[in-house]
Length: 197
Image 1: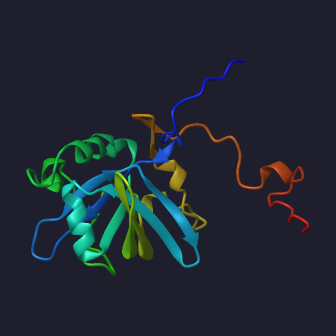
Image 2: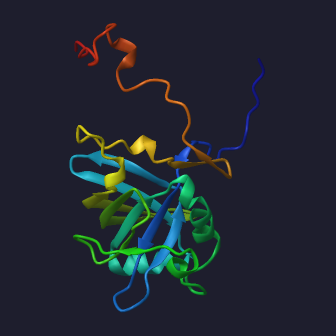
């Protein structure tokens, strides 16, 4: 088995491909596709997105300090890509992609009704980096699609056909190979044993 050295670069794949909605008061809402997004803290719930300064959405995010992360499914794949290659300066992305504005519960920015999960966020810090600026944000509210709630009240998100981004291509999540803690679970025991520390 051989290996090759590459120049330093972003090779941490796959990543969630998400549609981030933003809006200035009194203006039409906009959507930017983001793959540089992630979870950074669970308590309080916090996320981050990284956006290039030349993007139309950048100034909106900077001015308002609010956004909604909308998870994307295979049905939203075309809209996901479109919102990443067309500018909100020129087009109304909600209208062009036949997306429905979903009023948010806490923030002043709408989500996307067709998305299975809408994560309302308020920026706590903007970090000026190189090609991108990082927006660190606290999750203020989450909306989920009833279609993915099972009879026991569990949210079956992985049944939604979520989209990931890897090295310039989009993929639908595939075959399940395990669940958290399965490597230490006793046969017949659905819960993992706690690690001794």
